[in-house]
Image (cartoon, rainbow, N blue to C red; front, side):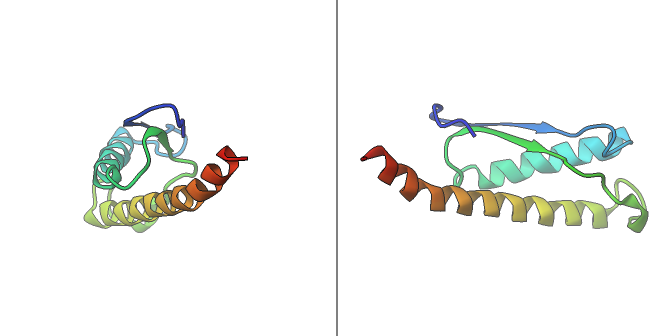
Length: 101
């Protein structure tokens, strides 16, 4: 995250090696944009990058467009962004204290 920006900007990176099918990569990107819009008001301003770091285990889902996969991705994105918000909130008092020394 970059602290020099006054607005929130975000990007999404979904490598082909982690989501082989284009339909799956597009689903991850679409749900990532949806999640970022939902959490934008609670996240601090800056540059944010959402990157798929591990492959998706699609064997447990009927298809890449299944409702179960979309629900699982939504839950994971929500958990991830809530955690980021909490980490940023807990880091802000420490940054303010460091600025005064």
